[in-house]
Length: 152
Image (cartoon, rainbow, N blue to C red; front, side, top):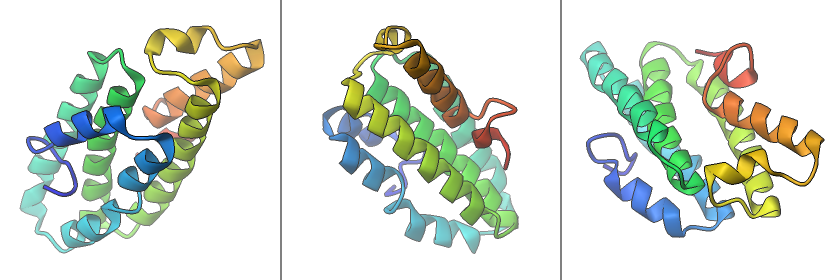
């Protein structure tokens, strides 16, 4: 339940709505490590359960317009990916580091530009920020050939 994996993910979406970007980073990264270490010891039968979490996270993110809720659903999906990777190899640490770096960049830009909605992404102050912001969000979503896709 502490990991926020579906179907126990509803608390994550509601909590993220009220958190600052720095606390969102802590909840999305550091607090996950003990739970992932437990998943690492779990049997292979857990794979279907974790894959279902990835699907729930991605489908939930599609219907979000508030940016913090979108990140919450992204967290649910990425926790599923981290759990899947942890159950078969030690590469979860690499994925976790990549996810943490990309998430830190997204949250930093979100706090600097004061984004609250997806619609605001297309109207940052400069063209460079639009490109940077778009690449970060796509990388967080795992789009190829960006960094967030590399471990998947």
